[in-house]
Length: 481
Image 1 (spheres, one colour):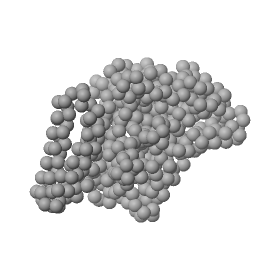
Image 2 (tube, helix red, strand yellow):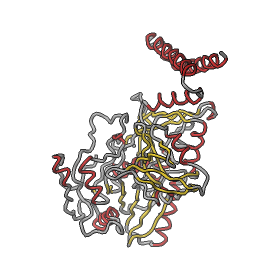
Image 3 (spheres, helix red, strand yellow):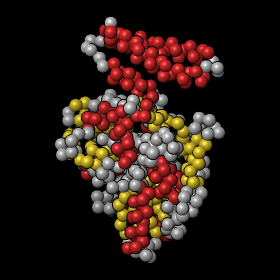
Image 4 (tube, helix red, strand yellow):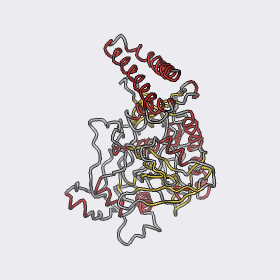
């Protein structure tokens, strides 16, 4: 009896918490108010019956948290309820230091999918790839687990071994053995490639702008006659919005970087570049691929629209939505991560589901070229069943033969074909002036009859301090075990 009363009290608190929202809309329609109250009562009834009759005792707190998570994840893949532990983990991630394996993951219809391994971490060294599925941890099946629960399975004390069972397209599931580490990802690495600077930015944590500027200054000091720069955003899963604006600002003399638009057509917020172009107009190329997501798509889209850089690679992930993290009771009860707006590039493009299309389409490997021809970027935002829709006027990429891929004589293990072509674009001054290579052959796409005509490059077409720019609520990134 006592437990039943506790459940009833929990249901009432849930109803009272919702009452504020319902009260705001009550004047518009009493029917909606009545239906909502009925469904809240129904939730309490279901919870009571589960507690009374389920075959084993249940944890009511976990049930209610799971219900809140299910409600939010039904909206889109990026909305969710964060438990107090998960909210603290998110804050650790955006500070750029946490324990684990170094993988960005996302739930995909009950399965755990890799968005990207993080440079220099156990996951990256073990060869885990974007689009891989994590099927089990230490032999325990994790299918159906929430992202938070999967993260907890993979995290642990530094130095402890962990075995992941990986599912990858075209191969049998296989085990990968890793050792947990304190993850302190270095977001920026750099070097000279001949006369051209190369900066690799792997994530947009709190130090991204500062470290990118330091890298550029170091390159300029090493070679005062540097002729151009390649900014590598491949497999960069995003991060903090203010850092995306900060990095783009390093290469622009004012003007718009990105805007975000909410439910209300009048709710438009624009973010402009601050400072000046630290390269003083030196030519730039940005490298992207299907693991380039969110904040890195904001930077790519801004530099493309503002005609500041040529984009080389393959179409990016296509995450053009804003997640606001709303702490509950100061974070003591966790937080709600809610999609509240869409990102738009300076020319007004939404990249949701469609991604940033490169000025020169170059597959990294011959295998990637075949995959693009077969299934057209199978692992993208659009591959999530309930992904937020793209604007009606925008179309998603269809299966096609990429403009370029490594020729048969190119050693894919030792060379980086996309970087090679990026340097070519800098040498020749533009994509238009760069001699084009023959398109690769993609036999399966031809047999299936899915070939789209190609005539060279694809046409040019976006999460809290922690991913936030508004003073209070943060915006979030994918989870990182």
